[in-house]
Structures are given as structure tokens and as C-alpha cells.
Image 1: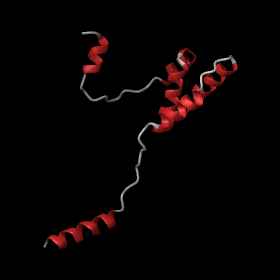
Image 2 (image 1 turned 180 degrees about the vertical axis):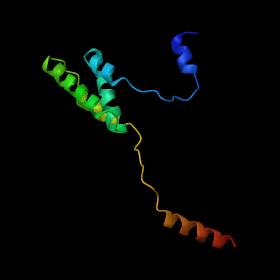
Image 3 (image 1 turned 180 degrees about the horizontal axis):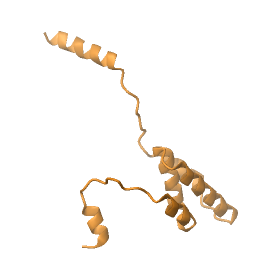
Image 4 (image 1 turned 120 degrees about the vertical axis):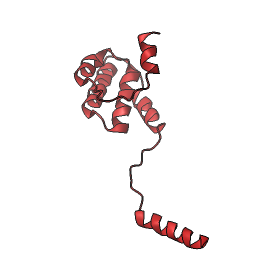
Length: 108
């Protein structure tokens, strides 16, 4: 089994794994435009490492100035919109309890 297959088949929880931000920053010029866009989308979606998103956007702008015609704006928007919406709002406990109490009373 290859090293990649071992990693994919490993079911142990990922504890204490940290991303090497400096390594990512160093490699940004080497990443394809699609990967830069996906890193921006991840940053927007999850709210992680906003400085990496900024560096990715700067790199895409440099590439555009150099003549790269990749439509990264549309790619970013489309990819972001395809993700499910995250909702971290806490439900109203009072209304939930009222509904539960009324349901229980109807059963009696």
C-alpha cells in the first residue's frame, strides 16, 4: 500500500494537525489558479486564514496583469455558491419547549 493510500485509509481522528501557513505562503506562486481560487473559497466559507486569501487574490491579480485570462472571479463565485449554507444560529428554546408541551398535552 502506498503512503497516500495509508493516509486515505487511516480512520484515526485528526488531532493536533496544524497547517504550515508559512509553507503555503511560500508556495502560492507555484499553485495553479484553480487551487488559489479554492483556497479563497475555503477562507470565505470557513473564515480561516484570511491572510492566505489575500495573498491568493494578489497572486491572481499579478497573473491577470501578466496576461492570464482565467476568469477567477466567476470561478470563485460559482464555487462558493455551490457550497451548502452554514447556519450557526441557536434555535429559540422557548418556542421549541412550547411546541413540545402542546404536543404532549394533545397526546394526553
